[in-house]
Image 1 (cartoon, rainbow, N blue to C red):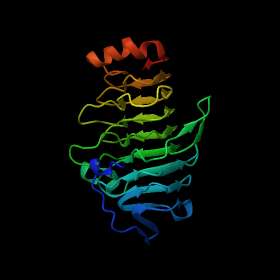
Image 2 (image 1 turned 45 degrees about the vertical axis):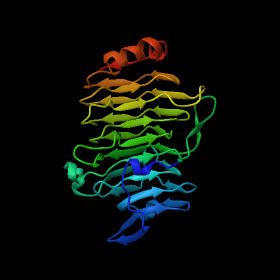
Image 3 (image 1 turned 60 degrees about the vertical axis):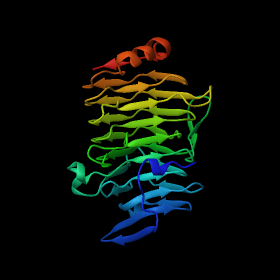
Length: 276
């Protein structure tokens, strides 16, 4: 069952595609496979974009996606956003560069009907929803304070998030809850992401999922947060390794819950945690 209504009220009456002064205007539901190309970039979302079950939105390297205040990209189908090291896909604010909270766009949300990422036995991405070599910035405009956790929000969904720069967002970095498949968050830079409610930059809340599913948080650099860097609940195979934290409260969330996580679950599986 799709749970978008619990996240954000979205106007779905009309699918908007047009061009104004060189911008490609988009918004509303995507019902068939759709491609956002470099030739037609930038794409400006004046309404929230909803990728429906059975549809794929594929975004080419180098494309810039600018979202109006409080607008979101909501995925109940499949999102393929794979840039390259030299040609990243950028998700950013359309108004005033996101200078104030009122100017910021919302978030990228994945829900239970979204196509999960799949991996081979070595953990190499094979298919499914992916954000790779992207820049995700100046999000969090879901209220003041923000009402949605994570500029990348996952509910019963597990996209692949890799080698991206996630920065200057006011609703944290990544938030995941509910039942998931394998979840890999690998090789990203999280810079100056803040959460009004004090949530960690990377938070996996809940242990739903098959017994053989994996949660891997590795080789990320987490810089400049008013909250903790990483919190992962028990219940799956967890691997946290090679992450670097700078100027955060703690690398892993503390308190009673954090201590229990460390003692009963994470400690035997954590390697290479570094505080700069």
